Image 1 (cartoon, helix red, strand yellow):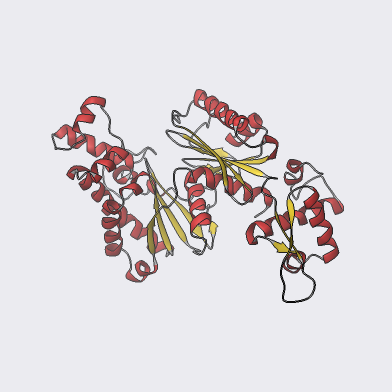
Image 2: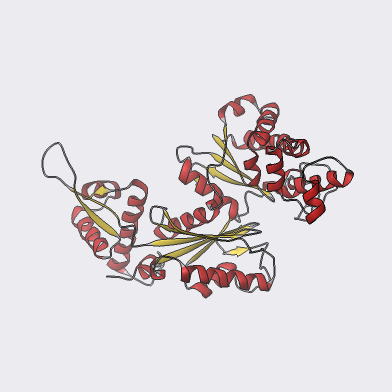
Length: 408
């Protein structure tokens, strides 16, 4: 039996030559087909992959020996010989996902069918662009992989998503840990010994939403409203990256004529008015001005307010919290009108902390989208809140490294 890591880590430029390399590539096609279409008979695989029956029989047999494929027995037919049907053995191969957030780490382990088998969270992590933070990130990643419930030798890849500008091809984050000579991907691979993919967090989340919930739609915008603002773009069922992998930095669009300096160093960005941090800043300013709110006591006691506190207060009928969320919703709606006029998507999904505000956010947002977008485009677009939890980033990252390795 071949070592699975060696088998899947061979690429088309591998040193393997001739029939061995060709057969490995064909086996990947068989696995990719089963991932996409599920269980298949030999005749179905032969017809769809254009591989002869003798070769297909040999390759599937070897995949069974390698414990990647299982024979699920014969299926019922209307007549003639009953064929055997083959499917993937989920216990053979696993993938890990890591979501590096500003204030937490989220880990998952998935199988070939994207089932989550293990999940962990570290809520005491703080993402800071320092050598110490990088060391902590590497330590915690190694500890999770060593401590998870899956045999580490069967984990073929690790997908890591992180906020800010990321180029998956180079494996670099251009916001965090940029002073290191090695890319973030190289640093993690060196520490863990596992093939790694670095991805932007919005793209990872949008892919998890798309693949896990809305695969019938081909054109989707995922809008994440958390501490910052970002989007993931699905066009023709595929993630859109742009030339350098930086597509989706929607929060840094200069929508407003204000003097507020954004985290990117420029003024007037969308994030300066509608992000979680912007709403927190406005709440604190209103409290200091003497405006009444049930959050005053908390601010006097702790000196800080989190966007989750504001959403909770709004659900308890706090007028100031409701006003701030509705104001953000209207401004978000105007910016989303700009988006849908350009992309004409079938679906816009709203995620992030602000999605928890529900109708307090969605009603003014949709009203503004209707007001500022073309009616034909608006009528073509559905809107909904995310149906996934905080693990969507880690799950999306695990899905993407799976696809990268098996060739989807």
